[in-house]
Image 1 (cartoon, chains in turn orange, blue):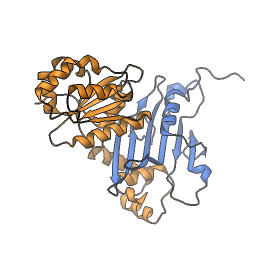
Image 2: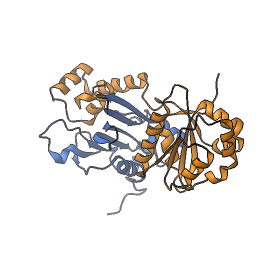
Image 3: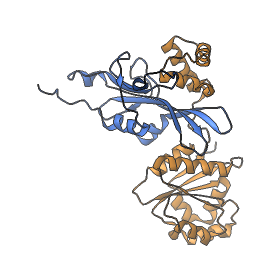
Image 4: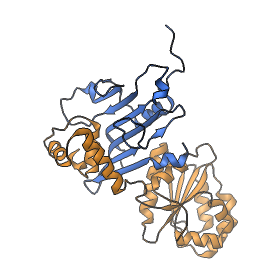
Length: 197
Length: 145
């Protein structure tokens, strides 16, 4: 059984990170599997962070080495999402470990890396890792999505409430004859018929 | 409620209808049509609980478009034992089905009865959450005449 950081989607990670307003910033780390698309996960995370606070988030990708990363972070007063460090060699993580005090910023920062990269950080930047370890999450793209059971449970409640079937709701939506209750908008999304909204 | 319990109540569902657009449902707790208090919900310190549902349209790279919402706050019976107040208050934004819907009632509130509604201002989801979390508090003692 593999035990690791708790799985979370970008919405939860963003909410937890952005809720730290007023605490001088802080770092959070999002670990990706080899098959996860880093660029998509990082962009989704930055989007969520921006939507929560209305502040533009700095995207820092592919810093060539530790001093370059430190310089780019220091040059931005905004919350930041850092990616593109998965190809760094062990020596660069060791260098960043030495420069870690310069990573302290007055804004919230998210580091998005593959799990294998984090293992390298554990090994080659142990002081940095102990600093990051307070907030580490395993990326799970569907963590916040309704399970099939939850979706069916909500649909069953809507059917009982209205006395209608899924087919009747779709037919009435197509005829633009649905009652004007927000529950029917919910119903169509649950049926994957958002095209009828 | 602890932060983890709050986050566990937040769920979403999506219905993509093009490469660039999704309709998304955002759920806070589970709708409790019979108002039993036995469904997942958010609980306040005074024992009142609330749930919400949002339906939005998402276009990549653009702000979300609000389609519909319902936010409902229920008061437990013991809170109402000494104060005669509504059992629940609910704020609805109906979806824009009908072109001739009276605009004043697309956005409305239900003060304690599903068939009784009054116009309400259009509020952002965060304004409504703020209202349900920190506002709408029943007084500890009835107001004297």
